[in-house]
Length: 198
Image (cartoon, rainbow, N blue to C red; front, side, top):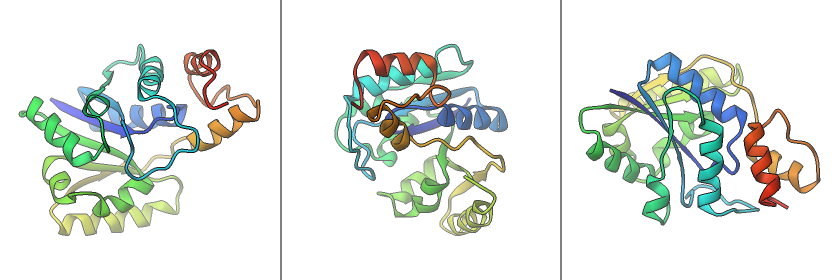
């Protein structure tokens, strides 16, 4: 089977995340796509953190009813910093015969060689990136060539994806602005009912 791994803080998960995941699911011909919220993202400081279980619940709401999409709590159950190499090792042991595709945005794709134990990442998956805009394509291509010299397998999706920022969504919630159209309606209701990001 071909498994897509889409990790992140998802604080909150938004329509841009889902659009990116759907694009890779189709482009790569995936059998499963795992949305995996981190316990603690080692590369991010979040101004208004929420409990990991709440981010997990929002991911479940956003993925509900989408064919092939699942939400995994592997990183949340493991606790500590959610290093991708550890997640890939665990996923590979659970699914030893499957191909794993690590789905990233442009920023992550361009810095993945700086992550903890990148050589393990290169060995266990194909690293997939998508540009934010037309200017990113050349940078991603150069990075893919560089990663290839390090033994990594890569795929670049040449497709424009909706640009949404979790940071901006949190700011809008704090200031009382509408986030309709930026997140799934079920996620919007969850944020309101649980008084998140206030």
